Image 1 (tube, rainbow, N blue to C red):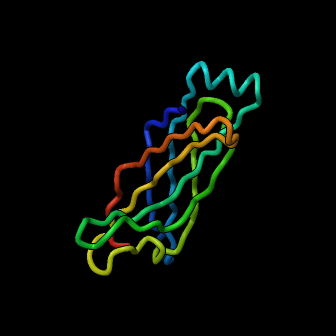
Image 2: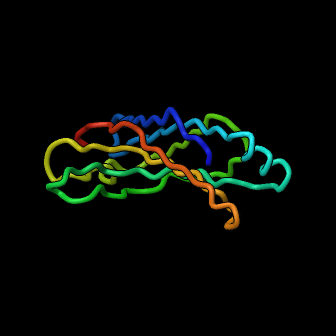
Length: 128
């Protein structure tokens, strides 16, 4: 399965607006077997990034907030995702600070090769 590493999330509040820029990056590496499947059979992987709100056990499960994007991946590399959103879409806690993280998933687009991996970034804390 692909290896996902170095997940990173950055949230930048846009001054004078109610918007925030969400930037997320991750490293994808394939092993020799996967590289052979990509080259010889045209195997492709779909890399996606979804933004989540982290919650403790008292307030329930983590909240899926929105998807940034997805893209086709056929080689090792560093991949970036970016989206400008309303700050309200990051406000996942009723009071106090919000804890936001990015979850990356990489999955084969071919059902006969169900290879998949996922990783999450560290949480970014702020009052959004």
